[in-house]
Image 1 (cartoon, rainbow, N blue to C red):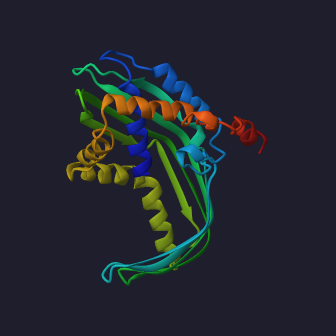
Image 2 (cartoon, rainbow, N blue to C red):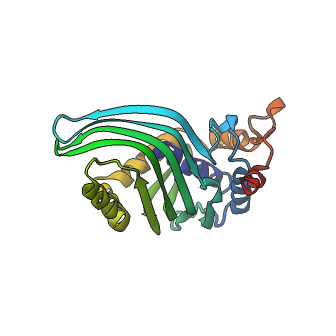
Image 3 (cartoon, rainbow, N blue to C red):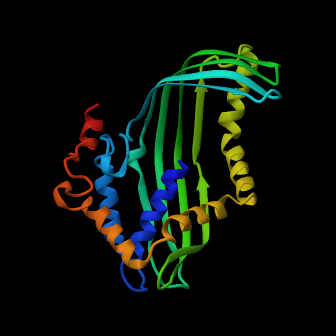
Length: 266
C-alpha cells in the first residue's frame, strides 16, 4: 500500500510540473486517465507493473509470527479476493504550482469487500489460543484518503513540502470464523473489532503521525521526484501518457475497457 501511495503521488507531482506556475493544472487529463484506469482494473496493466486489481486475488500465502513474548502463531490465506477497488471516486483534485497554494487529491472507496479462506494456529500472550480454520469475510465502507501539499519547483529539481494526509473510514466489518478456540472470547474479539475498530484505527494513525509517518512519506516522494530536472520529468510524462512511444502504444494499449461490464455480468 505504501509503495502504491508513493507512486500515485509521484505521478501527480510529475503531471503538475509540465507547465509554468499556475492554478488548475491538467486536472481534466488526470481525471480522464483515472477513468480509463477504472475501466481496466480487472486486467493486469504491464506498463505500470500492476496485477489485476478488481478483484485483487491471492491464491495462497503462509506466514509465521513469533516475537517470543506476545504473539506466536502461524497462519495461511487461500483464495483471497478483494473487490470494489475500481469503484473509487475522486471528489477533489486540484493541482497547482503556485508556491503559496496547496495542491489536493482526495479519493473515496464506497465499499471494498474481502472474502478468503484462512487457517490460524498458535496463541496470543500464551493465554488466548488460536485454532481457526474456515471462512474470513469483511468490508470497509467510505474509506477516504485526502492528501495536500505545496510544490517547490527549482531550476533543476522539483520537491514538495507541507504534506498533509487524512485517512478515515465510514464503516468496518470483519468476521473470521472460529479464530479463537473459546467461543466467548471469539465473540468478544469480533465485537471489539466491529464496534471500536474505526476508533482504534484512527488512534493508530494519530500515533503514526506523531512518530513522523507523514514526514517519512514526504521524504520518500522527494527522493523519487527530487532527482529530476523539469526536462527529465517532461520525458517521464511522455512515457506515462504514451507508454514509452513507438510500437508500445499508450499505457492501456491492448487492454479492453470492459471491466465494469464484467462486474455487472457477474
